[in-house]
Length: 127
Length: 195
Ligand SMILES: Nc1nc2c(ncn2[C@@H]2O[C@H](COP(=O)(O)OP(=O)(O)OP(=O)(O)O)[C@@H](O)[C@H]2O)c(=O)[nH]1
Ligand SMILES: [Mg+2]
Image (cartoon, rainbow over all chains, first blue to last red):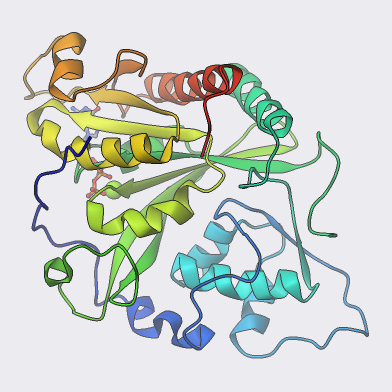
């Protein structure tokens, strides 16, 4: 069923925001993250290892602020568009600089879903 | 992979998506339950993206942005619930695939003055099979409708939960979060595909 007959012509967002200009040039045009990374995923910075080259440029900036923050919080803190922050963070994950705490993903099993949903419901009911 | 912890009860985060037309109260709902002031981020809408159905609607031809406000609720020591509020026009659908990845479900907020603004998000969640509920935000000047009349006007199947809320009220907003989580669990139990 298609309910939407027309688009409302209203102005959306603020195209004068600095991040709109910076955009995906920071990721050299890459918009697809190297690992699946939901916006709510919390990042943990790994202990530096001699085996890994330290990141430079925007990735270094992201690494500096991301510990115990979600992808969305990193984006907000650095005034980066969500998709850009996610590509940079996914690089850091793929390179071993950062690990990710549990979220639901495309691959979550029914048991994992039920577990997380039940924990959320319990938490909401007592909050 | 070391990025995928195996402990089922380990620290985790999850999210609920708050969708609806402009000014329907999305940010208000996020703010009344969040432990932080809603933070604003944005997603880019570029002309390379698939799913833009009418690029002429986008003010700068190459890139524009759409706001996503989010808030956070810590539920016990090990679990964080994020709430993402974002408008639901069809030209943003490609971005919603990202937004909805891993979501518990969605709350579609409806203002009885402008029912048609809910059509697009409803179509989206139905198409994707993401569990959603409809929350009628009662504005002071809005017409009072029976829930059944709104259900009919929105062409909502009878199994989709509908509730009335006041997005400004924390307890009221919380009922919406509880209802979508319960409904998502019910859907899981009945083996309806999720996400
Ligand atoms: N009476 C009443 N007013 C509300 C309610 N929820 C929100 N409002 C008011 O409606 C206005 C718009 O609310 P927002 O939360 O900014 O709406 P939004 O959906 O985030 O708007 P956009 O992000 O601009 O699309 C604000 O002035 C709110 O105070 C409600 O439940 N009842
Ligand atoms: Mg808003």
